[in-house]
Amino acid sequence: MSQLSLSLQGHLGVVWGTFIVRLKTISRYKGSLSMDIFMPIMFAAMPILLGQAMAGSISEASANFQANTGLTNASYIAYMIIGANVFSTVTASFWLFGFFIRREQILGTLESLFMTPASKTSILAGLAFYVEARSAFTFVLGYLLGCILFGINPLQGQVILALLILLIGLIPIHGLSFLMGALVLKVKQANSLMNSLQWGLGIIMGAFIPVTALPLFIQIVSFIFPGFYLNYGIQAALTGIEWFFGNMYLDLTVIFIFVLICPLVGYWVFSKAESRIKAAEGVGQF
Amino acid sequence: MGFAPRKVVRTEEFQLWWKQFCSMTRKEFIILTRYKFQFFLSFIQVFLIMFLFTAAALILSPADKTSYGLGLMYYSFILFMFLSTALWDIGNSLREEQYQGTLESLFLSPISYISTLISRIITNLIWTSLNVIVTFFVMSFVFGELPIKNVTWGILILILGTIVCFGFSFGFAGLALRYKESMNTLTNFLQLIFMIVCAMFFPFSALPEVIQWISRLIPLSYCVDLFRTTMIGVTPELLPFEIEVIIVAVSAVLFPVIGVYYFRRTVQQAKKDGNLSEY
Image 1 (cartoon, rainbow over the protein chains, first blue to last red):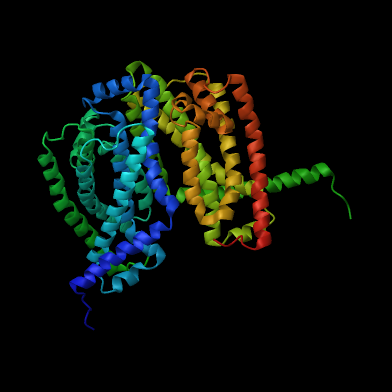
Image 2 (image 1 turned 180 degrees about the vertical axis):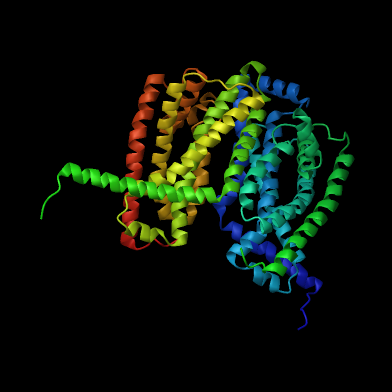
């Protein structure tokens, strides 16, 4: 039996179809979507309110933040609101991508999905578009709402550049999520692992504290994690802190290098894991 | 036909209840021990969460307030963990029985509702307590000594606060059976509300005046306030110590009674409507 192959239009149709299906599904869970917007604000509120209460005033807290982190002229409120939102989008990518296979397995649709002529790449591309759209939506609303609640101007800095960094910087995160996906195929309790791991990601990406204020071993791990550059880039674009390498183009170059490497490595590892499972027992088992 | 004296019947009833309770607790414990990886990871998770938020708060505060901030964060987090366990675990555990198709049979047997609910608490209570103890030592090692004042009162208030949380969760488990899948969003939302209104990770003084008034209407706020200020050794923020103790103690009696009552009513209604096994 000859295998059906799709034209370019067919592949684009698969990408679009996957995107729309996901969008329709999430639009039915408005509560879940609102939590994506409110949770980062709550995450940022915890250290902001406690820190302010201990410092005695906003100006004192600001002075302590600048003295302890070395980030002069930086607003700690903006830093933490942005950090919390980036943290939330990065972890959402890990959950949505990494657990895509597991979810399909549980629903009982994975085996059938892989039997269709739609290529896995097209399906994953559709999923990537969905994650990007959802992340941009929740990031913008979460950031706006957080800024309004804490009384800071959301339109300071280069907003469009920040949004572009978010959309491009999430691509390597999707790539890394494939590694998580490979782990999910092998380890049944991977959700517990991800539950714990996500908080570690918050630390190494410098979501609430610049990693330069943390011990050296954490800094080393941060520098090889693309989420760190994603967060730092958005912080620099919006709050006006100095770019990590002192120059915007150098920072963007590093992000682009991760854009090239991470999806390829992640996809390769994921495909290997998947092939091994298909050969052993099929992907319908879970 | 002879009649057994009333005292003997009561003793037998208690023995039977105790036997049921032990068997159900044992079942929950066996399930817990099968997920060793999850058990181990929970310790790492709690530490990472504490580290992330504590370090961020400490970076904004002066050095002489470190101990106070550390205490406030840690002691608030203890109650938050018990609340979170209470909100998620009992309802989820009953929903799990629905998925597995065993809930209907469970409630057809002459089993006590209270032992069904309490047995689901015990293992998680032990698990959370272990997490609390381990986190205490790790946090002290990483950030410096945590303030410990009035341990006896602190433990007593923590026990009462935990009873309030679990009492609330009994009623919430009833809601879980009634509203099924929508409960996940509701639980998330409620957790968020409690985090803000009960000032779970910051002093009440950091909240706007209007929200502080709402906080005063929720008994859990007094549990949080009383426990952490007692352990840190400062005056409670909301009301004088003695009044807060009375509120917490009364809540610890009322919440379980109302919770069990609501749960029992929901189950009986579900039995009547024939939707106990539907999910």
